[in-house]
Each structure stands twice: as structure tokens, then as C-alpha cells.
Amino acid sequence: MILNQFLILAALLFCMGIYGLLVRRNAVMVLLSVELMLAAVNINLVALEAFWQTAEALGQILAVFIITIAAAEVGIGLAIILLIFRNRRSANVDELNLMRW
Amino acid sequence: MPRIDWLAIAPEVVVATALLVVLAVDLFLPRERKYYVAALAVVGTTLAMVPVILMAVSGDSYSMFDGSYVVDDFALVLKGVFLVAGYLVLLISVSYIESDRYYQGEYYLLLLSSLLGSMVLTSARDLVVLFVALELTTGPLFLLAGWRKGDLRSNEASLKFFIIGVLSTGLMLYGMSLLFGLTGELSFEGIREAISSAGIASEPVLGLAVLLILVGFGFKVSAVPFHFWAPDTYQGSPPPVTAYLSVSSKLAGFVAMLAVIYLALPAVTDFWGPALWMMAAVSMTVANLSALRQSHLIRLLAYSSVAQAGFMLVPFAGGAIAPDGLSEGLGATVIYLVIYAVMNLGAFAVVIAGGRRIGSYEIADWRGLGSYSPRQGVMLAVFFLSLAGLPPLAGWFAKFVMFRAVLISTGPAGVWLAVIAAVNAVVAFYYYARVVKSAWFDPAPDEIPEDTETGPTGPLSLAMGLALVVVLVVGVFPGLATFFGDAAAALVP
Image 1: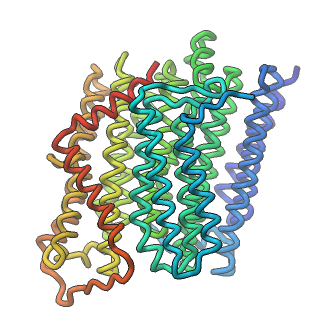
Image 2: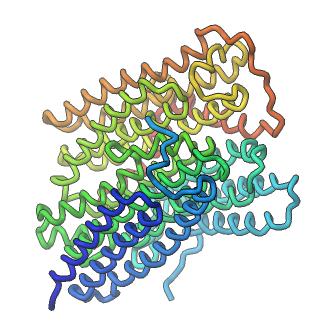
Image 3: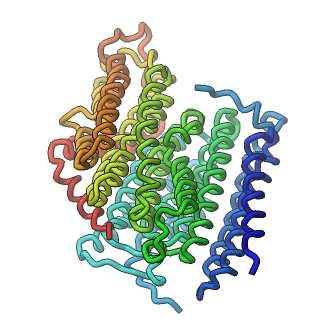
């Protein structure tokens, strides 16, 4: 069975997610980067479940929970971003610098 | 159909019911009676204490869903701490939220949701329950941080907290997926057995998984170098939310860390021991040095809470070094958590009460507080000096068990950590004492701030009084805290 290819894909996706989260300036793109990270985790889990073949399908269960909670989290995130956009006409993460040190 | 033990989940059921009642009742109350919702929330948390106490007295432990959800002494102690913290925060919030003209009902709904998540978390014994409970704890907090919708600082606090929160979740989940890949298990017990039977305790990939999970928890407990969100979020959020954040988010992170490290990964000390040693040493030092130059009280408390997280990590590192120091370390951390929760909420209650009167959180504006409001001045001195660890206030005992846990280990690593912690305790004393000095020894301003509070002040005073009693009683009779620590330490297999 092919496992390494999936793990490498997941690792690449995860790194792209972290990279995007650190360098993207638009808050919506930051949110998308987070989704990439979670997608990587899901690929990992499903591939590893196919490898282990556990009796309770543990990996898939965790993946389903992650999908559900990620959806809820995007809801919260978009609500916060909308609020910020409404108050300052921009969803740029760099401009959030009212408080420093 | 899995067997459900209703007594074992009664505390969660009560809080969940209170949450739904709050949601429903809020719809039918006219604007000027919204504070009834607060009363309902307070009643709910008080009632939830009843089954916790009943189970603690009976001394049984309950296990459900193939051991994924366990109610034992460890879980009961921490459920109790979360409930007391939630109760105190509700009392602290009432007058602030009442005067703020925002949506009161939703505030209590979100607060109770987060409380429910933390209570489930204490019973989590597998990675799925742990993950869901941790998200339920922090999700509502993202929204609460942005509570003052029109305030740009509150918006900023919320977004920063959210981005860091989801980043930490992502890292933690990736670590969990690697852990699953190595062991084929998600329950803590299964992971522990798989690691020892397959002999993979020193596998590099396992090290990566453990470090990623620790980084995720490091963000939640705001330990250096994952602390940079804390000062901004604490300053921007409404102060009662900050009080809850500084206790609940940190406790939740520590509970998750305790359960994962002591139940699933006790054999992997080679990886988490040095990592936590570094995290503890750096957290204490960096946070204390940053706190020294803060002039804003809430930012000061934010850095203080980061430093306290460092102190709480010390027993972990001690446990990793000593061969059988695990249960000692667990007990010490739990005692520290219990005492920290109460004294930090007390400190926030005083800061909120004083801030409403003075209208500023700049330390310089608090000068002479003791001369025109002796009651608040005394409270301020008690809680801040307790945070500094001055006997006979409760804080000294937390520090004492922390040092004892790290010094039982033989060898230079434990001694060095104890030395670093001791130096930091002295540095911390300076900035806590600076606030007390400003309140008591500096002359009062020419225009003494009038007490203009119009809302109900009873709940806030009650919260301060309760915290004061606990801080004094535990400080004089530390055996009470030891009892909780010993009960929780039974968790270590």
C-alpha cells in the first residue's frame, strides 16, 4: 500500500499552511491557510487509518470531528473579520497595531 | 447503545441545561431586567457543584465510552476548580456587563459554553474528547474577547487571539495525527502501552509529534515563546473576560498537558523533559523582565500570568528528571493551579473595581488608593503580594510545593531550574510590590476619584471577599491545598 506519498503530501500542505499564515496580510487568506493546515492533518489521519485498519476506524472519526469543528471555527473567524472590516474598512492583519509591548 | 452513568455527567448536564435556559429566557426578558440572566447563570454553576461534591464524598470513579470519559479524583478536583473560577467570574462580570449596554444574554451563554468545555476536558482520556473539549473551551473565548464590538482594541484582541488559537490547534492536531500514525491508538492508555510494547520511546518522529503537541498547549497556557498574543488580548478584551481568560484558558491548557503527558507519554521524558525545562526557564525570565517595565495594570497582570505559567511548568521538568517524581510533579502543578486560579481572579476583581472608580489602568493613576479607599487598598495588597508569594498568603505555598517538586530530583538540571525560579521569584516580587507601593505610599492625587458606581456592587464585593477568604485560609492552613494535590496525583499510573 502507498503510504509515504500521502504523508509527504500532508507535510507539504501543512508547511504551506504555516507559511501562508505567517506571510499573508489579508485576514481571509490567513483563515484559508489555517484550513490548509487542517486539511493536511485530515489527509494524514485518513491515510494512516488505511494503514492501521483499526477496528473502530479511529483515524476517520477524528478526521470527521476535525472537519466539523473547523467549520465552526471558520464561522467564528469570519464573524470577527467582518466586524473588523466594518469598523476599519480593511481586513489587513498588519494594520492591527494599536497595542504593542 | 453505550452505558451512560448519569451521576458522572451530572455536572456537565447541569451546566448545559443552565446554558440553554439562559439562551431561552434571554429572548423573553425586557431590556431593563436582563440581569436575571446573570442570576440564572450563577444558580446553574452553583447547582453543578452539588454532584461534584457528592461524587467526591463517595470516592468512586466512573468510566464511560470504553474509558474515553473518566470521572476520577483528578477530574473532580479540576471540575471543582473550573466551577469555582466560573462562579467568581460571573460575579465579577455582573456590574460591568450591566453597565456596558451590550448583549448580556449572549455573554453568559458564551461564558457557560466555555465552562462546559473545560469541565468535559478534565474527564477526557482520549485525543478525540480532548480536542473537542479544548475547542469548546477556547471557541467562545475568541468571541468574548471581541465583546465590545465598537472598540477597535477589542476587535484587535479578538482577531489576534483567534489566529494564534487556530494556529496552535493546527500544530497540536498535526502532532496528534503523527502520534496516531506511530501507535494506531487514540486513547491515552493505548498510546502509552503501544509506545512501551513497540519500544519506540526514542524514535525521532515521536519526538516531533510530542513537540508539536507541546507547542499547541504552549500557546494555550501562553508560555514563552508562544506568549506574544497574551498581553494584547488581555489588554483589549473587556476586563471580566480577561479575568476568565487568564484563568480558564491557562488551566485548560495545563489540564490537557497534564493528562497527555502523564497518561499517554510518561515514557517519553527524553523529549518533553528538556523541552518543558527550557519553556519554564524562558517563560519565567522573559515574562518577569517584560513585566518590570509595564505601566498598564492589565498588561502587568498579563506578563505576570505568563510568568506564573513558567512557575507551573517547573514541576513538570522536575518530574521528568527524577525517576519517580511524576506523581510529586503532578500534585505540585495541581496545587499551583488551584491557588493561582483564586488569587488571580481576586487580583482581577480588585483591578476591575478600582478601574471603574479611577477610570484608568495606569499604575501611576492608582497612587494613594489606600488613603481614600482603604478596603480596596487592602484587597489590592493581599492579592498582589499573594501572587508574589509572600507568606502567610496562599501564594507562598504554591511556590513552596513547586520548589519541593523540582528539588527532589538529584542532579544539576533540577538545581539550576530551582535557582532560575528563585531569582525570578525575587524579580516578580519587585513589580508586584511596586503596585502596592503606589497604592499605599504615594500621595493621593489632588482630585480624589468619586465613587460613581450606579449598578449593583454586591456581586463584585462578594467575589473579592470569597477570594480573600480562600487566599488567607489556604495560606495559614496549607494542608487544605495539599489534600487537593494528593487526590489529583492519584492519576499517575
